[in-house]
Structure formats: C-alpha cells, structure tokens
Length: 404
View 1: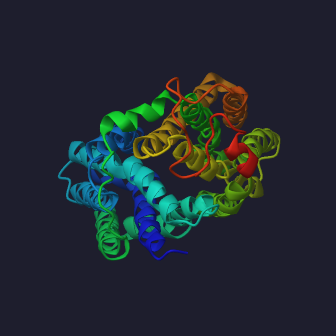
View 2 (view 1 turned 90 degrees about the vertical axis):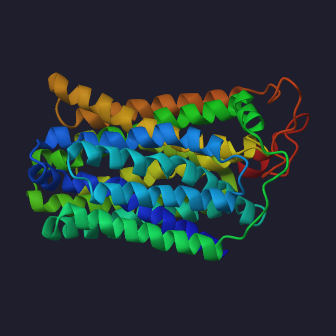
View 3 (view 1 turned 135 degrees about the vertical axis):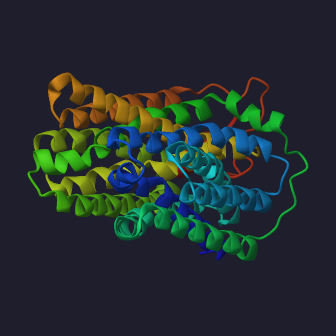
C-alpha cells in the first residue's frame, strides 16, 4: 500500500468520527443547551446539508489547485468547523459549526478517491479507494464509541476538541505523506462539468441516491429497533452500533478487491443482496442481521465511486465529490422515507421494507446504465483514458470486460 494512503485513511477516520458521534451525544447536548432531543437532531441534518452543499461547491472552487493543496485546504476547513462546534456558545452556533464541518466532507472524499486511484497500480484502483473508506468505517468501530463515552463523562465539547486534534494530525500527515503534483494544465470548472454530460456518470449517481438510501432507511432507527423490537436493554444500543461498524468494515474491505475483479457485478450483488437481507431483517430482527445488512450495503461504495471516476475521464474531481453528495442524499432520503412508514403506524420494521424497496429501485437504475450502449458523449469524446486507460467508444466495453 502506498504510504500516502495512510494520510488519507487518518483523515477519513477523523471525518467519520465527526459525522457519526453526534448521534450518541444528542441527549447530552440537549440537556446541556436546554433543548429537546428531537430539536438537537437538527445537528445531524446540519452536517448532512453541509456535505451536500459543500461537495460540488468546494470541489469546483479548488479545481485549479493541485490536489495535495486542495486536500490540505479541505482538512483545514474541517478543523475550523469542529473547533467552532467545540467552542459554540449556544445551540445556533453549534448548528453552524456542524454545517461548516460537513462542508468539506464530500469534496475531501471525492478528491481523496481520485488521488488514491492515481497512486494505485493499474487494476488495483478499487483497493486504493476502499482503503480510504476503511478509515471511515473503522471510525464507527473504535472512534465513535470511544468519543461518545468521552462526551458522556467529560462533556460533548471535549469530544469535538478531540476530533479537532485528529483533524490537525491528519493535516500534518497530508503535508508529509501526499506527493505534490502540479495542477494539470487542462483542469478547469468547464471541463469538470463536462463529466456530467456522460449519462453513465449520472446513472451511477442515481444508483447511489436510491440504492444506498436502502441502508439508512433502517440503520437510522437501530436504537429503537434494539430496545422496542429486539427487546434488549438500552445499554445494548452501543454494542449494536458497534456491530454495524463491523459490518461496514467487512463490506468495504471486501469491496476493494471485488471492485478490481468485477466492478459492475459487485454493485449488482450488493443492491440485490441488500434488498433480500432487509426483507429477512423485517421478519427476523436479530443482531447478526445488522452486521449482514451493513456489510452487504457498504459493498456498493467502492464500485460506484470507482466507476464514476473512470467514466468521468480526466476530469473526475467534481464527479467523485458529487458521488459523496449522492451518498448523503441517500442517507437523508432513506431516513425520511423510513420515518414516514413508522409514523404511519406500520411499525419499526417497516423501515427495513422501505429500505428493501429503495435497494430494488437502485438496482433498476444501475441496470439502465448497463443497457445504455450509446456513445458516452455526443461529441465523440473518448471516455476512460484517465483511469481505466481503455478506449470505451468504438470498442467493446473495456470496463465491463475487465471489471465485470
């Protein structure tokens, strides 16, 4: 593994802790700032909105920077957002801090994915992209439980100060370990936007929005499912969430080599498998199924990100960042639709059936991409020269032949 990937994984670990730790600290924050837990839940939404807004905007704003400098700037942004959260004098400032901390999330992962794929040997791009996402999933096993425990005993502000320190460590690692490459002379916002003329890129983004929404339709309600449906004590919630983190890590770890071997079939299997295991979970809500759901669901992350980068050709930064916006739209949409089913009186496990339906829709969108055999661009531009090194127009689908 290229040592530069370690800096990206440390950064992903810090971002993962910042994103998910607030879910376990909502009661602590609500009590300290004299508000209710549902109102404090807006802190989760503020971060997600920051991701969706910031991913395309910051990636576009930094398009003329070298990717190393852009990564450093984004991590500095992340540090400022978490420091603002730690020092927030009131709830409104904390919401602002969460929004700012979320802004660089999608752009960072988009740029980091491109850097990782560029550093990888040919045929191992999927492993490189997955190695970054492993930092994010490991945060759910180690970082989030530890940071939550710290916040419960020493206060939520200490948690965000620790996350700020992790961000500073990641910034130092980026400075020392990421090789500098000058900005590519042809890089421009106009060129980056041209990637969205590729129908396959748009369909991959649509697949992420619907398919990954299936994961979060039920994952967001695991705490209540644990106590109300599984009948376990409230103290078990932390262990169930840790099991979810184990599942995420298994899925991402498997996704790397499987993506390099067969990208499309890996995504197909993830989407179809997710629909199946969510239906099983709806009738058999056992803790082991939490591991299976998250493992199968996160199996789609690396292949979708890798194929977006490949088909975006030599202007992949904005498209890769937008893919993380798509994943966060999936989070928000899945949570919302699962909540609607629960609020309608259909029971906690109805959220799993909603997730299964979203996974099926995502699979349908993915199949539309495979059926689209028209040229990638109306102007006849060659696609795939940047990462895949294959000419995809006027020849067999190289990505499909090599990766599926």
